[in-house]
Image (cartoon, rainbow, N blue to C red):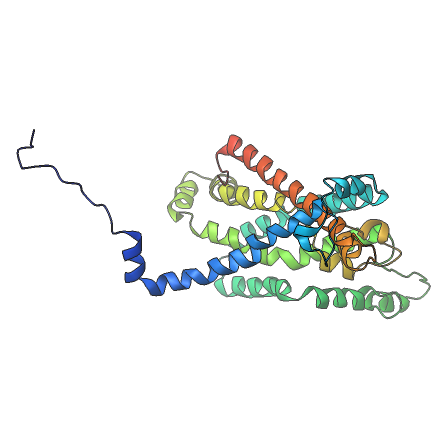
Amino acid sequence: MQAPNGPSKRVHTGKPLSKRILENWQMYLFLLIPMVWLIVFKYWPMYGVTIAFKKYAPKAGILGSPWVGFEYLVRFFQSYQFNRTVFNTVYLSMMSMIITFPIPIIFALLLNSVRSTKYKGVVENVTYMPHFISTVVMVGILRRIFDINTGMINNLVELIPGVNYTLNMFMGGHNFRVLYILSGIWQSTGWGSIIYMAALSSVDPEQHEAATIDGASRLQRVLHVDIPAIIPTITVTLILRFGSVMGIGFDKAYLMQNDTNLVASEVIATYVYKAGLTSTANDAFSYATAIGLFNSGVNLFFVLLVNKIADKVNGSGLW
């Protein structure tokens, strides 16, 4: 049976993909570059993770190396380094998160309250700059400040009459942890506040005007207007932070490391480096890969867990 206006026809909602590619090949060419980079440097190396379950020999290659299963994971779990490296990694990561995570939020809220755009711009530039200092330079600055012999702090202390005290923040586990966390605050506060400043800029000024008319103080407007507006951003940022809870950076911990603070500075990243690249064992690559795989697995677990909790609590999960 035909419709009053004639036989029904199939309606095409868009052009075929091949035709769209031909018409916009320049744009797809730009897309090809990051896709190739992603495949070559992110997805293809995942094949190398299989050496964590093999006794890898460079001459035999990955396919020719014998399969050993979870032998290297079990060895790491039974190693005396397991408790030390996992504890140090989790402790530094969690303490850094607990202490440093709220600071950029508070800083952004305070900076958002400043009315002078000139003063705000100066403060932003000054606080952003430490983020662009390389880790090597930053640790060098810390050593010039806190060195026991030539450090600026100890030189100033020596000028005080009757005081015979030296401060070496690179000696001992407790000093290392304090310096690691405090330097992280100095380096990341300004840069970490950018995303919250962007979220605060999207707050409708009429909400503040209405709250002011209702008699709300500045603190009440922050609590009931600004903070609810950035809750989704805070949630996403927290999920991403938990995704790297076991990802304490290698460079900073290794550069600050010495024999006196090794009990606190030996994290998984530095141990993987020593076990895989400085060890002379025949299965060093496989052992180090197994440790790195364990580290990535824990990070993935925390991402899934925190995302699930965030989705249940306020519906702000990543997926």
